[in-house]
Amino acid sequence: MVNTLAIIGAQWGDEGKGKMTDLLSQDADLIVRFQGGNNAGHTIKFNGKTFALHLVPSGIFKDTSSNLLASGMVIDPEALYQELKMLETMHIDTEARLWIASRAHVVLDFHKTLDALYEDIRSEKIGTTHKGIGPAYTDKAARLGLKMATFVSKTGFKTYLDKHLPFVNKLLESYHYAPVKQADLIKKMAPYQAAFKTMIVDGSKLIDTAIEMGQNVVFEGAQGTMLCLDHGTYPFVTSSSPSAAAIPLNTGIAPKKIRRVLGILKVYTTRVGGGAFPTEIHDDTAEFIRTKGHEFGTTTGRARRIGWLDIVQLRHAVRLNGFDAFALMLFDVLVGVDTLKLCTAYKLDGKTIDIIPADHETLSRCEPVYETLEGFDDDLDKVDSYKALSNPAKTYIKRIETLTNVPVAYISTGPDRTAIIKRDEIIAKTLKE
Ligand code: GDP
Ligand code: IMO
Ligand code: MG
Image (cartoon, rainbow, N blue to C red; front, side, top):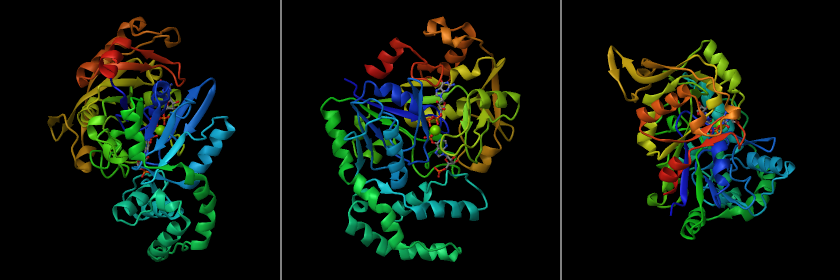
């Protein structure tokens, strides 16, 4: 029996992981976010309502589900508190349904200050979300970080600040920033400590027990594979690993317990922030897609960069994640685009290559090699099965399957939970058996 499923972004983030997590959580008992923090922005729509989540797993809308912020995350207490308040005003009850791993790390205000500072002083801007993610993971790796278990202990938090703040303040002062006042920080955090104290659990044990009991567990990725610190387009990446390989380490469960991996991708490509993007386009089609797909960041509101689907990039993601199947998102956005392009290789210094060069400057010089396909004009409001799609639409999907060797199990045709074409046979064979 398959009872664990990972939902992973196959591109540079914003692929629609939130929508698919919400949808698939309808059959799940426990939903786990395993890395990143509120740099993520996951949009979910159902019953005429729209929700934007940044920390809370997108499984929260199934009212019998449990949801966990696992140990690999970095959590901004203020942001989490506000998100819970937002859910409360939207009548989503989170009482006794949201848990925080005791080993998750905390993002404090000075991490956000440092995030902005590093961006300001570095010559090559990453275009981070300014949510303090990089500095919080830096502190973790430097063994200066703060775990949730320590944060919720009043004495633990104070002892941490006694040790760590002089170091932070020296750094801030050297760049003429105001130092952090310990008493102010303690006062500001007090309500969050109180609110989260009862939510702290051993995340590893919680997940493992659920799996052993035969419950269905969904792991919700944030960001996308190309933003992976280890295998992405470094240095234009985030500071964690959004890939399936990161789940065991970031949750505290054994690798063999991750049974199925669903790759989420748009039928084109988007990217927010700086960095190489070989298939990026700046023409009328890009504008058409940006407008029709509302391609503006959920977290920062920035216009997303737009490009054609990149098979070289997707094969990289397939290799890293071992996707059992794909969910193809924003399929409706391409309706009306006359000619579609798929990048099947790169040209570099006169040679054809089919891997992502590790050196960023080299990747920036790669030129896409395209094959063109006929566009499709389906009225997707009237299509509820794969069979009912037009031939050009099917050809586009089949070509993606052939070039990546991954079957497409879901085709998303709108932001709403109900706008989805399910290919039941493929779902059964790749994700359930
Ligand atoms: P995530 O970060 O991967 O969860 O993705 P985001 O929520 O940041 O971005 C995806 C955007 O596309 C959101 O605004 C969704 O509401 C929207 N969306 C998801 N699926 C579809 C779809 O099939 N069609 C359209 N038009 N929008 C979609
Ligand atoms: P979701 O979960 C798209 C990008 C930022 C920047 C880089 C580093 O919604 O798919 P960071 O603040 O993490 O240090 O920024 O990573 N980035 C995302 N892009 N979707 C996301 O999350 C992202 N999270 C971070 O734009 O380029
Ligand atoms: Mg997003």
